[in-house]
Image 1 (cartoon, rainbow, N blue to C red):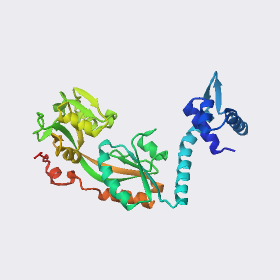
Image 2 (cartoon, helix red, strand yellow; image 1 turned 180 degrees about the vertical axis):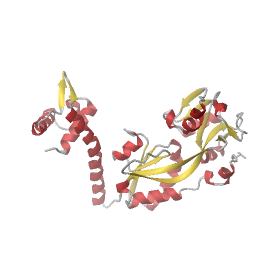
Image 3 (tube, one colour; image 1 turned 90 degrees about the vertical axis):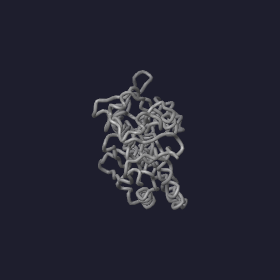
Image 4 (cartoon, rainbow, N blue to C red; image 1 turned 30 degrees about the horizontal axis):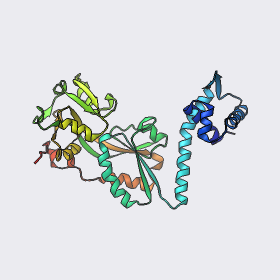
Length: 312
């Protein structure tokens, strides 16, 4: 009675806004699409849509069907993709979602040896999701989520893979460059440069500035780490990044890390996956490789002592 085609139609009509546009995407005629849905409504004894002029509005039954379609279709697509890979002698594909902007450089150092060890597994990285990282895991958009802020929910498993310290990044000639640590009020007159993420998800806000009731003079967002660090190096603002990443940049740019508060802000990076898939060999191998991880500057003596790397 209820088939995958019906789910696909409901989802595409909602996405495209009309039966005509949905029919074009699904490569069927509008009359065939309409006939299929009318037949389903007759079999179910309830309407899926109500017509309001030229537009369609989902009924309560239609809204439920749309929720099922958004949940089920990605799972079916993934199952079909993996079965085709098995048929072609391939291992599979590992789709990694990123909720940690500065972790991209770390990820590259893990992916390189992984691709060498698993030549029959493809790797794809996504940084934008329809419903956020957790939603992407539940919705089968991705297989692994890289995040510093895990949400421990039923059906998901999170594994800590490395820890790091979040520090303030300033230009080498900045007034705060030689400070042992900074206090929240030290940033009240600064331009704070961050990634384009909600402020309540930024550590420098939720763990440092907001508890002290302090706001920076100005908040500016930049998507790429390279440009962010260049802005800081040119004296156009300050930023907050992992110490290990700042120390890599400090070797080629005039920036230094400064501890946020006397105790610092210490974080962990987690890899999240669906519990039902944690046994998959190539997925498990990636988590184990990430846990061993590449050698990062923050794991050395400089982080333990809190000393900043000086440019020679």
